[in-house]
Image (cartoon, rainbow, N blue to C red; front, top):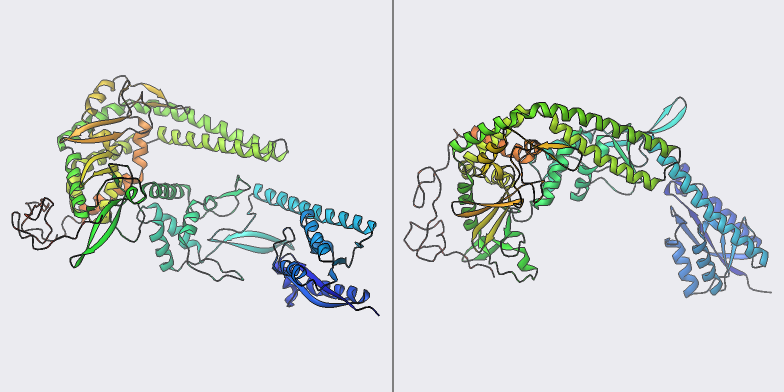
Length: 640
């Protein structure tokens, strides 16, 4: 009498929901498969010695824990004669995995048995096995294609094909006797999301500080059956701030659709938050372990790398220094570490050099007013042209979608055309915004900018650290440090143009006959400053013997001009709003008592004068009694 064969059974369900359906510990499918496999083993006279169950695992891949354990046992122990499955598709749903698993069984001398299919080792059985495996692969691929088709159609109709982002809830409702899956606003989390966008758009937060504020307010992620709720992480928050779903746009498979769900955020706030996020990313002014209002604005004048902040211990204290990041990365830069107080003083001195006189500010304001007077009529004509352009683009988008719905356009062409139409629409909207702008608002904004330039030195000296940071972001693209001095600055627009000594003469040359210059995007911009001939777009000029570099934005080497769109762009930028807000705060606190700065090293008006001690050529520490007397406090050794 031959020994009884040893068998292992393999069971699988695709989703976790199937494994727990009906309040049963294993749902309905797994017990049914087990019963059928055990009956087949009894029919074959085999003893079931092991059971392998993958709960909630897809058969599209062989990377399943229990299947891998079964194959490892076949390779190591070789103690099985049969592997029994309910159907072949429980084992694999693609022909490659099916062939690989079948080969592993064959090498171990094990026969694969299906309860519902005749796949024995006869030629007919092997042929049937191949057909069944191909059919399982077709079923899986066809099901995925049909599911994708349904999800695309749902997105086309404005629905949400996946899990809604934080601030919304996926809900099920009974409508006229049928279940409808839709999205509703989360009453618990939506107020936090609205606050987050408004707060970040104000420019007063970084992503890290906003995440901390939201955690303090009580915002948590939605819990799942396997993950508890938790505070929002930094990367999650950055992704959230970029998600157009909150303004009604559903993106699926690379295509954008207009959603039916309620908008949590208006477009203006969303765009402002995106601009602040991009500006913070570009300027690298993020809160880190060491905080300072000059971080992100300072660059090494030798290699162009950013300068970061470090603290050194020595002589009984901790001292702050700026250092070149490029030097730490092996660029061979010779820029030494610089004490923070030296750079602070150098930057304060720069503000005194950028400042323009009140008389100069009045002169520029008057000439700008005259130059802009003739732009109103041309702005109305340009606005009408841009409205016609937007109407045409909208018609093109509708025709494209109709062609896609009729399956006359492939999805890759739809994506590329949609991206093109979106880019052109955004350009047309920007030009329309320029053309419809209130020139009164523009003049008021430029007037505020001139006032800030005329008063920037005093305001900067009186400002606390977080407002100084806003000043630096608004006025300068970069501050270039050589040794312990700020030798070169790149002044940001429009301050560079407003402070340029050549501006009044340029305005006089073009106020009577302004010219229109094509922007290359279908719009004409009226120049307030004449062409610069072959002068480069980056211009250098002198302030108190120091070279200041002005970058004229949006123009090429043959054109360095101050145009209406640039005026409006500045009027809308966060830099102006932040700087004006800083100035307003300073004006409100002008009557507040200030801490006394009297004493050696100070001059009337509260501005500290650099003091040099006999201990060296550096500015003496604050512990010095007076200029010319030896310092009692020695600074820490400069880090190498």
